[in-house]
Every structure is written in C-alpha cells, then in structure tokens.
Length: 312
Image (cartoon, rainbow, N blue to C red; front, side, top):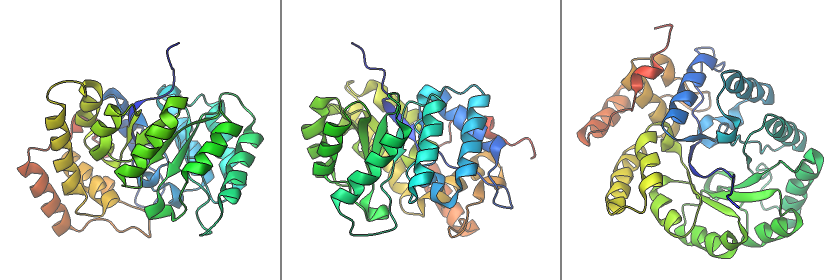
C-alpha cells in the first residue's frame, strides 16, 4: 500500500510582520504559495517562523488564511507544541480538523531537566485529548534550542502506545549519529525521520529517511527540492555540496534575520526585514555583507518577483 504521509522537503515558514509587529497576512500567503510551487511543504509555526513569539490566535488566523487561499492542507505540518498543554491541544485539534498532513510538536520547553515520564505524559495527554485517528504527530527534537531532548527510549514508548498517531520526528540536534540511530531503530517501523537541515538531506535519504525540514527552505527552496527529487542521480553529491555552500553563508549570520534580509534585498520589499523582539533585524552593513557573499556564489531568490508586496 502506498503511504500518503508527507515526505520530501518542508520549510519552517518565515512569518513576515508589519511595522507594528502584527503578522503580514498578505506577504505570508504569497511566500507560502511560492514555496508550494517550488515543491516544498509548509512547516508553519516552526522555530524559524518565530512561532514562540506568536499567540494561539495569530497562528490560527494564519493557518486559516492559507486554507482560504486554497493551499493544500496535505502539504502542511503546523508546529503545535507549546509550554501550555491547553495551547498545544487547541492548536493540534485545529490542525487536524483543518486536514493538515501532520503536526510538528515541540516538547514543553520551559522547565529543564524534566524526565521522560513527564514528557511522555505531556505528549500522551495531547493525543488523548484530540482523540482523532487522523492525528499524525512528528516529534520535534531540537535540544540546542529547547534544552529538552527527546530520547530514543521515549520515542519507543510513544510508538508502542500510539502507533497510529506517532508518525515521525524532525531531528535538529545537528548530530548525524543521532539521526542515524533514529533511522536504524525506528524507520523499519514506518517512523519517518526528517533531518533538521538540508546539510544532512542526501545522507538521510540514502538511509531511508523521509527528507528534511529546513530553515533555508525559505530562501533556497527550488535547489533543495531538486535534490530531494533527484537524490539517486549521479550528480547528487555535487548538488549536496552546492546546498552546503549556500547554507554555510546564511549560518554565518543570525539565521532568521538573515533570511528575511535576503528576501527583502531580492524583492525590494523592506517590510521583510522586520522580526519580532527579542530578535533584532539585520543592519545595513550585515545585509550588504550577506548579499555580497551570496551573489559571489551565484545565489538568486527563485521567482522573487512573486513576493513583491502590493503596498510597495
């Protein structure tokens, strides 16, 4: 039987803001449509979406805006993991009822040093409260940021308790050995492993993984998607090296402000520079340096004209 689970490349979609820090719905819609057109799924409300600087109400509004525009819910994996159980339940239920392919779920991340038992109870409470067979949970392992890791034993326990709901994981540990351990232990059970960066995309696919959920999918979508589709071709290693170069340039700067600055520079829309506090937007000097480095390797934002804002 052919799996209908979401696979390939997804992007934790950047959230554009107006000058007053309210979400720029029109820019968001255009950006998401462009990503879909380039073969990239939408992991809206991820780390690079500034999701934890946004309210439940704002997230619901943005998801509904995409659905109203006719973007396919089957290409969406909203982030629904919050510190508050009630927020996680509300967002998860809304995503399921909207027909989303799955949800990307952070562990509750405020309290540090919590036990696997506590994390198990948190995930289990959300799944039991939503109580819907359509729910597909993709765990979000990002210990460099959350400081709350998701252990292999916890995954094993959740899979045994909720085999129809626990669908996979995004591994943003940055540790290939950890990703490989997940692949070897759980991929044979139909548990999908997504790398947290396109730097590991080719290796992940070669070991049976599902793809990647990557920040720079926002700004290099076409090339990353191309590798996911042609990873068995002879030039796959060369494609991976090219992706690594572009990723490496963005990684020299604060990632979220840098990606927004690149979009602003490529489209001429200064509204894209805005980030929500406590993040700070790129300075003109940083932006100039970033764009010089990117243009030196031949980088261009694919179909930048599609993001030109009506108010410009």
